[in-house]
Image (cartoon, rainbow, N blue to C red; front, side):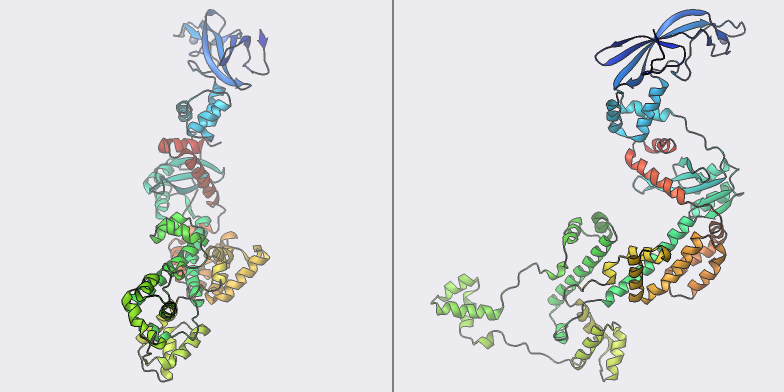
Length: 582
Ligand SMILES: [Zn+2]
């Protein structure tokens, strides 16, 4: 008899009788030698053995082998005359539950495997570790774990998360002092969150996002609590507000670096072109615009699939353009037909070689008639110079072009300028002219600041504390501020707001809002209007230490768990996984 085998620790009083190796298992015979056992009903100790019986339980693997314990346990008489129970079986509370088929420690290992893996991976890992089990067992073991109670919460962080691909939302609740997820709810309605908070009258602070659901939930469920409009979300909302401002500035920057046509282009003629040519031109211009959008979204880090969805175009095209450097609009799908002039020279040449009209027609893949017709013509008659109709715009074309090249993009200003020089045409005529300038198919412009620094990067540069920027980032920031006056004006606003948020300087908020009101940033103004509506909570958020930053961290962890579980067994399992996460 071995007592206290270091390879297979057993509770006090349990001894290994002998070990037998079978093909699949290590069978360990264990006897209980503890002199007394307590009656489970009245807790009286008893030493009167009634009989012996055997149990077979699985235990944690040993050296990678399955271990089965043949446990010889005893039945005792309860000697307490007041107890209803006369005979009871010996208990091993921390080692194996009555009637269980595995030891507590094996069960815990299986649960740990379940909480850190999913599906058949769990089963495979278990096998590798020497535990033979099925995923259903693992799942059952996980679900059997009791949910820990939320305990008492002083500072509650609440946020939502999406499951089922953003079609359904749940709620995550975090104890901000303990940095722990305390519950996960299947909904994000104000009703559900209010119900939860009602059970916790001890809550003093509720840190939440800026949506109305949790605001209402907190007002109803925890009216005693101070609501804190979370700094993380304030900053997030602010970044969203400046994102649209920055995108607008970028559109402007891109327009500024539109291709500049060369001045010898026969511009006034262009807009007298046939409607088909116009349609083709428009198609190419559309394509070019689409291409620019795709490149822009790619630079913002969107996936091809997302871009295809957003722009309602096939994914394949996005993939193709992703690989490509120049704009596809300039790569004509059909090779240009040889010039008439050239064709004429070919006919003459072949004729000199003595080929018949029919042979020439075959060789050049043109009609015999054409050969006949062209034979009689002189060179100049084949390709007569296009007669240029004069337009009232012609005298001003060169001037407008040069202004365009200087960067003047305001059509009405250009129109006023040439009106002063005697132009009598309408603004409409000007627009037609300028449209041609814009659509002129010339190669993409050399990359400017807007191409080199993405919108996302620009936002980051504007919003990050300037003192934390690296040297090259600082010069990037300088460059975008030089390129756009608006961005230069946005920079100090973003900096002060960031400082107010980071340093919790709520008292400076009103001054900042006034500053925004005198600016021309529509979306930032809309953002400040929202701040005014939510004033108390925002001020609490900008003054108190509580913030949802850590909640966001927990949401990320939850997302990871969710992806791992592929949404199997739905919300209950997800909740279990999150609350028992390793
Ligand atoms: Zn008893």
